[in-house]
Amino acid sequence: MELLRLGAVGEERPYVRATDGTVYDLSSVTADIDGAFLASDGIARTRSALEAGSLPAASTEGLRVGAPIAKPGAVVCIGLNYAAHAAESGAEPPKNPVVFYKHPNTVVGPHDDILVPRSSTKTDWEVELAVVIGKTARYLNTDEEALACIAGYTVSNDVSERALQLEVSGGQWSKGKSCETFNPLGPALVPADEIPDPQALALKSWVNGEPRQDSNTRDMIFSVAALIRDLSQYMTLDPGDVVNTGTPEGVALSGRFPYLTPGDTVECEIEHLGKQSQTLTKA
Image (cartoon, rainbow, N blue to C red; front, side, top):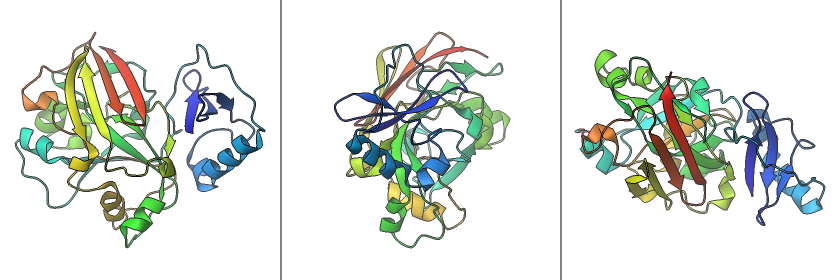
């Protein structure tokens, strides 16, 4: 099944898509898909409601697709987590995870426009596997404990403004990562137990229909489990928090491709998690 939030900005409602493709209204189970829902066994309660046949089928025609998690408390990001991307960035593979943050209000729907900052000269794309936390992650000892804290997975585009990230800011990454609309998320939240191996997912991106990134999460330097376990040693991750796990090679920073400009279209796709698409416009 897939958890969805559909509706106009600020008016999204919760839905669930069953394995046969039917979409059901989830309002009788929860007011929204958020940290409180995940922390209270919301995914299990949704499955039970589906099995019981107690959810009404819904017509979703014409409804905007929102981000699949409402108002994350934190968006924690990992840099240089694919060896080939580190190489194209001119950096040595890190010995420990590189951590930075995006402002939570960067999270928008998977098909919402990306606003190019007024000062932008180097807006870039990054397809990433996003982890949504379902249980408090604090001082975890094992990978198994880390994986047990994950509610599900979704697709992220960790949009970056490289001049702000690396030049104007003096290397303060979050300044080039936190511009408005810089984290399209979705289309759906897929429960973790429906993704048997998060280290075996193909991920791709395109710009104006032309291929850019084409890799697999098996090429991560630090696995999903290792990242959550490591992060829990120096921060507490709460239900509803999002962790962007890094991007593979094939971004504009490499010098192989031009940066994005208004009018461009970016598409990001991850195996089993779906596809998103955004058009760039001026802020």
